[in-house]
Length: 303
Figure 1: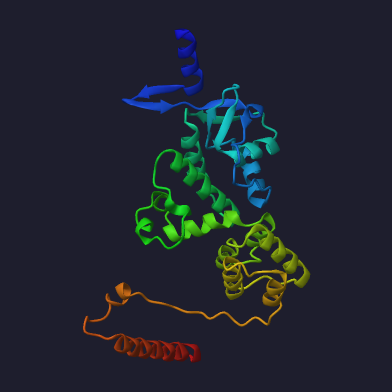
Figure 2: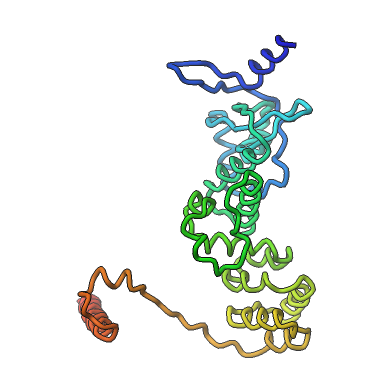
């Protein structure tokens, strides 16, 4: 029994001590033994980038080993390297270099999310699902998890671990997680940029049957809701007043252009103005500077 355990440690973890540190060893594992991570939120797209990866694999092999963990049935679960595995399949390779790590279920989820969030061109649906998976894993580990609560909890935003590690604000993280409440058809419209991110967050508060009514109306009218329309639908829904007629009336009205507002916080303004300047005085100075900047642009344009 002791020998079996030592053998398992050697063949599946394969760490060597070098310079006082444990060094992980790369193994070549058959592709059929490499299984996708359960509910992996990131899509594997066979796009131009994938074709470039395939050509690289054909020419140079897999330069960066995937990270996997052993499963109970003797296979391996991919934590980082789903695209590389697919590239290997398309390139006709039978094995892929990997590093095997022993991780708990929750630690594996967190590692998988953190590794894949480094990708480029991540869809909103992928980011939303990944943040939610990581949040739930950290919840099971006993860490702070109030992110799914209402957006009006400022004391949680500054020190939220998930937001910090993702290099985004807690408010942004909460909004992404809200997107997971959208019906798949609406989420697809967000991914395709037919519905903007902020209106989509407001629509996520609609009940499932209300969202399905909205989907039908979008298809029939060939129009998607603006932010103001989404906000009104949300308010009506919260008051229990949103029905098919009201939704149709909102969606078929003539849309007004959304106002573009720029707000500067007092913290920013205090860096550039004396403390005795009133907001009115600050505004006057800013307008004068903008007028001067505009004149310089016009002069440069006329040269």
